[in-house]
Length: 234
Length: 229
Image (cartoon, rainbow over all chains, first blue to last red):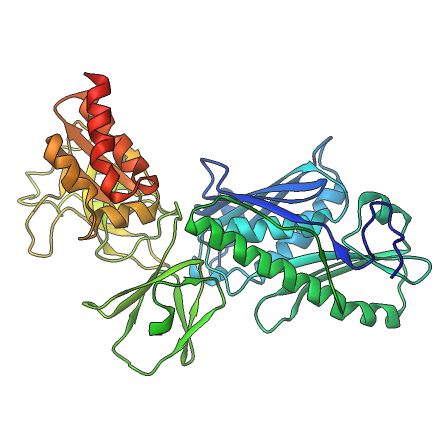
C-alpha cells in the first residue's frame, strides 16, 4: 500500500492511544483519552440525585452529557455530538439498576485534530469504568473517512476530515460485536460502506482491547498507559 | 467460577454458569439466565466462609446495601426522624426511635451537621435507604453519635480493606498511638485521638497505606512521629 497521507500513516493505520485515569479528585470517575493531537477529558458523576426533577425517570437513571469544545462557546454542532454520545452510552450503561438517579458525563476537549467524537466515546468508556458504573459491556469507537478516489482513511485528522467526500463515526460494543452507533455524513455508496465495516470492526476491537489493558494497568498500579500506532488488517 | 477468583474482569465477562445454587453474588455481578456476568471492572473476590463472590474496585460513589456500616452526616432534623447524608444518590432516613433506650420522651439530641455511625436496615433501589443506630441485638454496640474527632473520605475499596481481618494497618497504628476509629463502608472514616498531631498521622498513614507495602508501614509511622516531635 502506498503512503499517501500527510502525516506519513498508512490508509488503515490508527494513531497511537494514550490515556490517564482518575486524574480528577472530585469526580467519581475521570479519564483522558489522547490520539496524537486529539485529546478529550471525560468526567463521570453518579449515580447522584436528579438535578432537574422534571427530567427524572421513574424506571431508569437519567444520562446527561455535556460537551465543551477547546475554544469558543458550545454551538449546535456540539449539541449534536452530545446527543450522539448520549445515545451510544445509554445502550451500554445498565440504567435500570439505579432508578430515579442521574449519571452526568462531562467532556472537555483539550485539542481537536479530527475523530473527536470517537475520542470522546473512548474517554467516556474509560471514565465509566473508573467510576464503577454498571455496564453490560465495553464500547469502542472509530472514525473513517471516504475519499473521492474511493480510498478509506482510518482515524482521520481534521485536515483529512475537511477534504474527504464522506465521513462515518462508528461504535461497537464488546458484547456479541454489535454496532451501537453509526453516523454518516456526505454521500457514500453502499458497496464502499459495507466494504469498510470489517475494517471498522477490527479497529474498534483494537480500541476495546486497549481499554481493557488500560483499566487493568490502573487497577494493578500504573495510572497512564500508551501504545504505539497500529495498522488494522481487514 | 473458581478460575476467575483474584483475576481481573471487565464488564461483559461471563464468569460462570450457575451450577451450585448456594452461591451468593454481590457488588458488580449480575445474573442473566443461568450465567453470571460482571458489570464492573475490578478483581473478582471470593469469601469461602460466606460462599460469596464480589468485584473489588476503587470506586468512590457509595450504593447502599443492607447491613452495611456507614458514617453519615445529619442534614435535616424533623420531629421524629433525621435525614442523613451517607454519600449515596438519595439521603437516608434515620428514625429518632432507632437508638438504644430512645422513647417518645427521651429522644437523641442530634443537630444538623453532627456525625452518626449507623447500620443500613433498608436498601432498595426504588426506595429511600433507612439506617438505624442499633445492632442486630437492639443494643447500641458502638453505633450512635460520633463526638469530636476528624472525618475524611477514601475509596470504597480502602474502607472495605480497613474492616477486613487481614488488614495490619490499624493494629500497627495502635501499637504506637492510642486512638478511636469508625470506618464506614461508604468511604468515610472518622478518627479521634488525644492530639491533633496524632489524628493527622493516623489519617496520613491510612490514606497512604495503599502505596506502602505492609512491612514498611511501621517505619512510615515511626518516621512521621519522629519528624513532628
